Image (cartoon, rainbow, N blue to C red; front, top):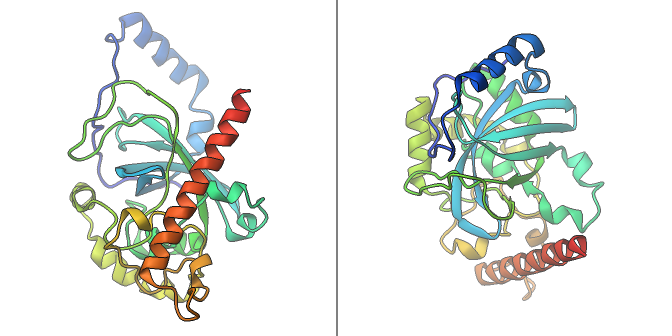
Length: 277
């Protein structure tokens, strides 16, 4: 199914380089006619959300996902910084169902972020779809997980991006509580798409009963001490009892989050070092 955006946004950065010559443009035009779009033409699902970086949650950006639903349990997405023809490709995301997530090796799970808050909060939208179709799409993604890497920091509201993809790929995470996302990003997105996230959130309350506790919900809690998880959002690991026998306390949650984040970073660094060897 084709999902058409209701508006076009512009990228925050223009890639470094010389203007394309007439010859280069001619080659591109010929290829478009003779070769067709190929694989990109199958990326017909457009989702717009937001990503913090796992190792530095202060780096936040709007993300336009253009996805292909490969089967019932797996989707793959190219991520751009806008939805216009001049958008910059800055990342990739794979989306799996909870069924596939449970089959992952424990060491692999550290790379996969939960999606329930993005859906229930209204942060994740499918612009241009009728409400019924969008709600059905979001229902199909409840309890799913994503593995996302951003290869290029192309900027966001109030932050300039790099003119080229520089540095190591950045593992992205998801927002999982109120008070984590920079509100300027949300306001700018809502204005560009002419939508109301608060209204969408109210309409998606019918999905709360479907939401199960997910792993990774509290991984970034230490970076957002004033965060508040709404009804329906729960970390599966922290849903256990606290150290005193009662419900887990905010201080225990923060300590667990910091320990989990440090362990995850150390493991990733060790794996990268092993690959380099």
